[in-house]
Image 1: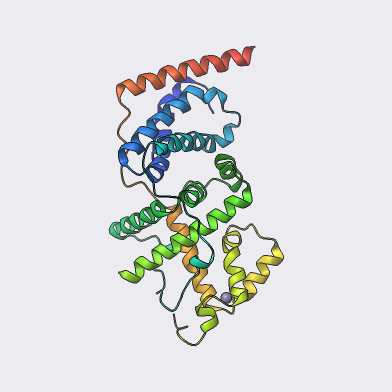
Image 2: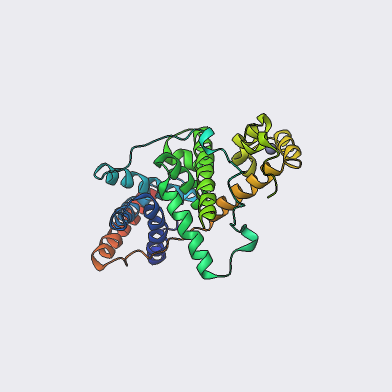
Length: 182
Length: 102
Ligand SMILES: [Zn+2]
């Protein structure tokens, strides 16, 4: 991390946006997401001299955000945790139509379509049980490595992989169900 | 898709090979499998329409996560917080400098 005063403004902007994206998907309410993002931002600035590995700055920031999210959550009511079995995430292709989600090469040009897909994936991520949501958020939304994610969540890389896979399967299922209902 | 009704094993996801692949698809897509395991999966997929479709869907939903954007802007950092951030930043810089010299 650069150590000069001129870096201050860009850091505020970029960290705030990143942290807010994380807390937005993690906290149930917008107010909570704002509050936790501000607490995290302040903590990041108070302790950035303790950052040991500047190349992993994003992982370090998300670890702080995760801790504030957890503290917030204890004060609010959340749905009980549950775990998915692979069985319940199995595809049933007889009933599911092809998922009309464009791959990276064909991002929809229509802003409406793009916004709708964004809203669907957001709803699906929010509905995931916490252990899967955190894995999907860090690995697929923030695109951190398996190792970084394991460090943030205090679990092994194998556990990250397992949770990520089940979280992705659940998202696929949710998006397919949406296409089906449309 | 045209695999309706005539491939009950595949359709119900109970073909043992499909199931095995199903359990490892994320690792496959993330390039975390050994070359021989990849080759095995690719050999099966080449010949299995439900698996092809499923890989396509899974990849599409992963892409949707990659592209996710928060549909709202965070409230701007107000003067009070900005002041705290600025002070925290200066203090951390000072500590870092002191630690570097000590
Ligand atoms: Zn198959």
